[in-house]
Amino acid sequence: MGFLKKLLIALVIVFACFGLCLYYYANAATYLRLEPEVLVAPKGGGQGTVAIDYDGYIWMVSHKPDFVTINEDSCVMIISIDPNETGEIREGSVTVKSGKLHATLTIRQNAVATYVSASVSSVSLSKDGGSEVVTVETDGCEWEASCPDWLTVTKDDDELHIKAKSNKGACRYGQVTVSEDNVRYNIFVSQGGKCPVCNGNGLLLCGSCAGTGGWYLGFSYMQCYACGGSGKVACGNCGGTGYKE
Image (cartoon, rainbow, N blue to C red; front, side, top):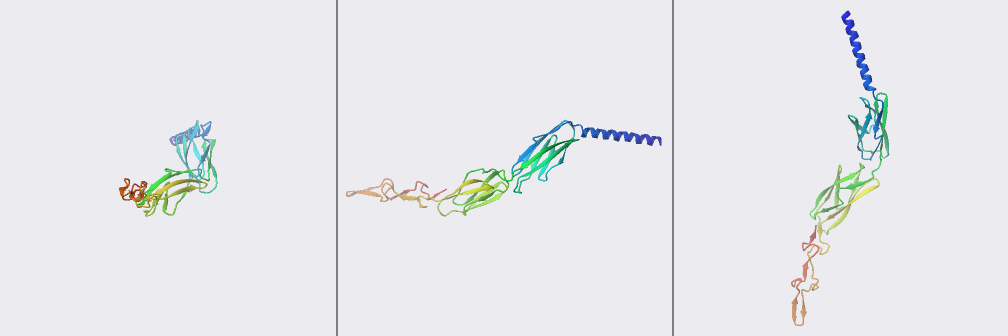
């Protein structure tokens, strides 16, 4: 019995010391600050880093909004914010605790996009058809694209695929408009086709002889040096090919 009593007393002392150590480590901080104290997030969400400045040993997140995910790394919080599809500005707070001390991070998230841009401002497609992939950059999350009926556009995450079928007519031009909320970005698109100057023939009337092929000087005939007597010359706009890319 004496041995068991001593063992119990020793265990009580050990647990008491352990509890005191835990209490000390949990409540050692005398100050707790967050840097920054406010995060402003775009509509599309994203990540932010918040530093924990304190003189203790243990800190923990005791509260966070449901649209926020937090990864803890030593004295840093990595804040991941979901896209805001509510249509309204939303606000939430993250509370950090160390012992009896608390610090609050305020998160405000916009409800509208402030800019839309793309990796290029113009795209050229072959007369035989083809496609181009453009990267769209925005602080929103619900951008859309519109285009002329001879084009097809599809959205794939942050990529915009611009496609056109083969063109048997004249060169054509248009624009793809990428927009979200009140901001937009225009991408100029051109596609090769029949040359608009020679209408796909590749030849034009000779300007030197007005298409006659030469001149009569009295009883003699002089062949036009520019067209060699044919009355036609290669189109300078398409180089005589009849089409433009």
